Amino acid sequence: MSKMAVIGGGEGILVFKAAGVDAYPAENEKAARDILRAVAKDYAVIFLSEELAEKLADFLKRFNESPYPAILAIPSGEGGGYGMEELKRASEKALGVDILFNNK
Image (cartoon, rainbow, N blue to C red):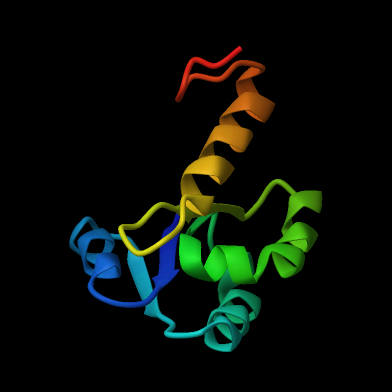
């Protein structure tokens, strides 16, 4: 299983699609939740726009119990920094150090 997908709204997901990542448009959290339920077992990595990831934070916790899919919030110009904070947290968990901001 090495397939990747992106779920989000707007034109941001088109960049991923151009790179060969399966893209699923979702303009709201209900649509994103429904798509995640339907496709989670088919992908190793799922990128989720930070706006949707923040709204679905509690729902996404259930995916932490298994190694796949890895669901990563991706920062966007429209978000409030949630995506970057989640990437920082994930890198610290995996590596034991902050490689993004070099904070101690």
